Structures are given as structure tokens and as C-alpha cells.
Image 1 (cartoon, helix red, strand yellow):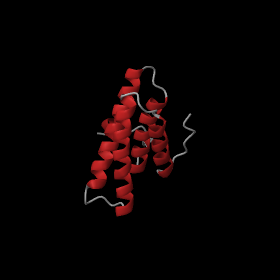
Image 2 (tube, rainbow, N blue to C red):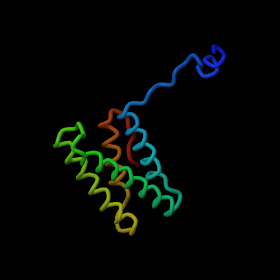
Image 3 (cartoon, rainbow, N blue to C red):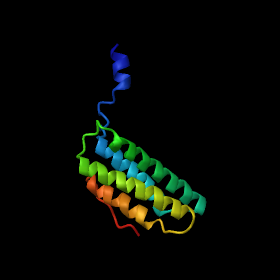
Image 4 (tube, rainbow, N blue to C red):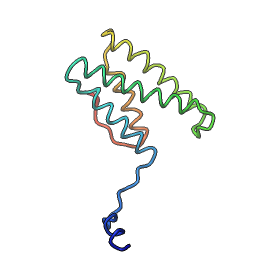
Length: 119
């Protein structure tokens, strides 16, 4: 029994990630991909991933059980709609990706992380 316990415990516990930390990590990952696409296909994949993230957020804030204030939920939902519309323009090469990056970075700042400039 002691051997099994010692095999699975390293003496150091991995830090638990908070919901905010998980959200920050998701935004950080997709924003990094939006900032440095190697090709239009890579940009399209990053825009798609960003849209999926925002769609998940919109679904979350639309849930009546969500604990955020109604005002904040409405603002996040609006940003999700804007992101979806602007993403379509980026994919049609009719708009720049920079507004999507800036929105994500603003959210990351709101989640409490330090964020460097967009470009």
C-alpha cells in the first residue's frame, strides 16, 4: 500500500487552476495563434478556434444559472456576437484580425493576467 501511495505522490502537488485561470489560458492560447499565423490557413484555424471559444462563452452567459451580473453577461454576449461577425469578415479577407486580438487581450486583462501589446 505504501509503495502505491509513494509511486503516485511526488511530494509536490500540482497547482490547481481556477476557472479564471482556465479561461485566461484559453484566451492566451488562441490569441497567440491569432497574432502569429504562418499562413492564411493557420489564420483561418485560429479564427475558428477563437470563434468556438466565444461561442462557448455566449452559451455560458446565456444560462440562467450563470453567476455573473446581468450587465456583464449582456456585454460578453455582445462581444461574442461581434466576434462571430468580425471573424466572418476576416475569413473573407475584408477585415483585419487586430480587433479580435484586442478584444481577447482586454478580456485577459479583466481576468487578472498581465498582457503585452497586440502588435
